[in-house]
Image (spheres, rainbow, N blue to C red):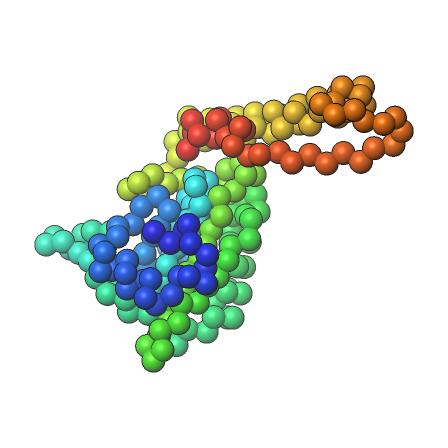
Length: 222
């Protein structure tokens, strides 16, 4: 896996280790041989991949890795070869893909990080690190597709009506619990009901809210 590593540790040797170790695609990892083309189907597929990570646990989408195929020609989820992206113009591709994400997904996604994996003298690969989103579900809206995707251990899948409803309810419930948590703490501070005595007068209140206690609703959905 790469998602738990700082990006500066994801280098050519790490990609080769994924191949040699037979590391398969999964919930937080997907391999692509080439960047998405300019056709509508390629763009829809790319946006489905991106939103599936954001709507689940986040993950890394790595371009420049050719997958192995079985006797019937089906991809196995393991790397056959690290082929790179000949002629990659990182700045141009980042602008193109960021515009596609910005215009083809609703609501707006958290920023996606682009990381070029250099392999001199061979062509580089490109890793897109997609964070898990806490803003609720993101929908692919490109050319009126209107589809929601998430991920499981076997890769991305399209959400059904029940899963979409559950996802929105879970997000709203989590935000309500955060708001109630903050309101309760502010009330106690104003009433001087604090573990340590607090002087009367103006106060600056800083709340550090751990995410994990509010993940239960999300966990049931994800």
